[in-house]
Structure formats: structure tokens, C-alpha cells
Image 1: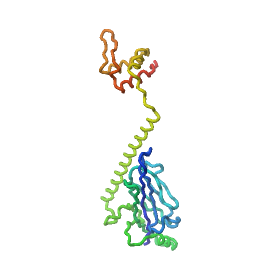
Image 2: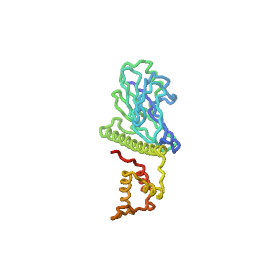
Image 3: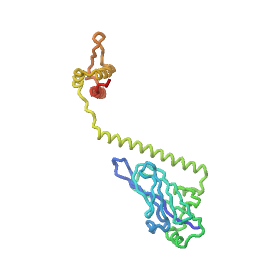
Length: 277
């Protein structure tokens, strides 16, 4: 049985604070040769392509990279679970999907990676392909997790486990952990989105100018629109300082004692148009 060794990992850099989009990090998710003498693969002779599945809130969450360097770069503000699928350049080998936890730390720069071993089940492997395996492979002294041709999925962060085969309970724990992280990401994304939309709305819609109590009182006295008079009277009666004469049915009110919100509401009522019959 032959083994293809690769590195799956990511790097992240902290961005300056105060960005309009709220993003805190720039990150790159990658697949590289296990042999550190090579920064990237030189061609597609060993790996045909790599598919990166990132969080659904990103634009185009599934991205297929068909030539080296096999990597994608984005910016964001939270950690999330991703899936990296590697397609070996062998016709009878199934693609290998690896769940990956893209974690963003508070440091200025961080790199996380782990050597992965992809077991080849094909019996007849061309000599040229075996040469590519040897070219990009690392020393056998380093431990690495294994992804078999049955397409079992293991995370690069699982290498510390004593047993390489996860039990069903461990699978459930991992799945719950990924779902919880995704939920936290969604929650943070919505908060950032709401904050951004609020700021944009404040820029597009200037704040209403509050008219003085004297100006509003004058407009109320001059108003002849029955509908506006009715709505204004209805609102004024809700104020604690307003009184209604039992004999003349006139309202007595003092707008100087109203707060800003009440003055704004009166101003809005005065802008209403008479309803159509």
C-alpha cells in the first residue's frame, strides 16, 4: 500500500481595528507538500485539484482550485468548520474529504497545520506517480493521521488521539462541536451585519430635526386638517400634562414639558395627510 503525504492547514493575520465590515483577520486555507523543501506543488501530477468548502455566509462557499497553489484567502471575524476535499491524480481513487477547524486566535499572526496521510488502495500505481509521492513526502519519523480510500473523514486536529479510529460517540461530539461553532459564527455574523446596516441607515437617513415647543404649538393652532387634528388630539391626550375641558371640550397642553421623543411624534403627526374617503 502506498501513502501520499500532504499538509492541510491555515495561516491568519490580524487586521487593523475599526474596519467598516467588522472583519478582524485575514486568513488562507491551504494544501501543501509534506516535504518542506517545496513551498507548493509544482504541477497537478500528484494532486489533480482541491475543493474548499467554507462557511455558507461567505460568497461562493464551495471553491474548486484546479492548479497549484491549492489555497483560498478570505477575511472574517470568527472561527468556523470547513471541509477540504483532495482529488489525487489517479483515475480509480476516490476524493478524500477532511473536516478542518479554521480557528482564529488573538495574536498578530498564526499558522496551524498537520501532515495528513492518504492511503492509496489501487494496486497498479504508475511508476511516475510513485516518483511524485516520494518527491513530496516527508520523513516517516513524524506522526500523521491517515485518510483511507474508503473516504473516511478525519480532522488534522485529531492526530493527538491515541486511537486513529473514532468511535460513534466521538463522531457525535465532533459534529456537535462543529455545529456549535457554526452557530456562534452565524450569531456573530448577524450582529455585525445588523450593526453595519444600522450605521449605513444613519448615514443615508439624517436624524430628524426636533422643532421647538413654540413652533409645534403654533402649527397645531394653525392646523385645519380634521384628520391631523384628530390624531394630534389623540396623542396629546396620552400626555400627563394635557387636560380636557368638560364644558368647551378644548385641550389644554404645555409642550415645553414634553421630552424629545414626544416632540418628534407631534412633528410626524403634523406631516400626515388627510385620508382619502
